[in-house]
Image 1 (cartoon, rainbow, N blue to C red):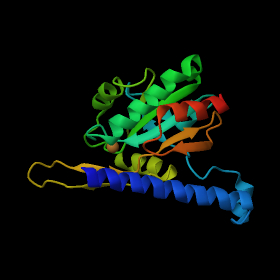
Image 2: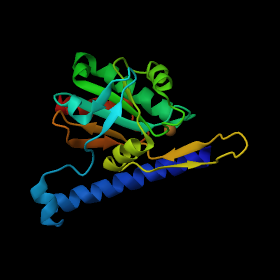
Image 3: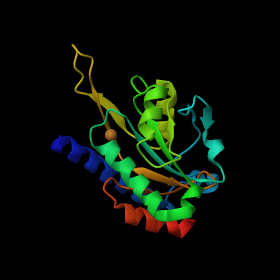
Length: 200
Ligand SMILES: [Cu+2]
């Protein structure tokens, strides 16, 4: 478990570093003109998923509100619940302004995470948490847009049990749907709150 945790943390740092390098290249104007002229965020993009009430939800539905997005799976023993707890604590700390921020959990395990399972799961965290799922293809598309890497591992052929390795970044998206920044796994809630305050 420790090794696994380390892997995910390292993966988080690696992705963070890549995003950082990408941002650096962008600010220095080294990247291709296609990136500069498109004005599109490097992270995030359109998705069409279903929320815990069964409603079809697209990224467009969140315009006008900020999003804190986290991809994970409800069977996750440690990282997901810990991070969703941190997101909840950060929003709690934010006070009334938290109303402008929608916490979003997107499952990477639509096979086991049914609408009901996701619904029960998000009840454990901040009020207003949106739990999204979709077909494996829809999930893969959303994950790709957010540069989230994930893969099944330790599949037990007899029980069918498995776990999922996944990157564990929290993405902070603007009210226009564009990427603002992200928080690596382990970022203290107070630090997240402090960053959110600068934008709200
Ligand atoms: Cu997890």
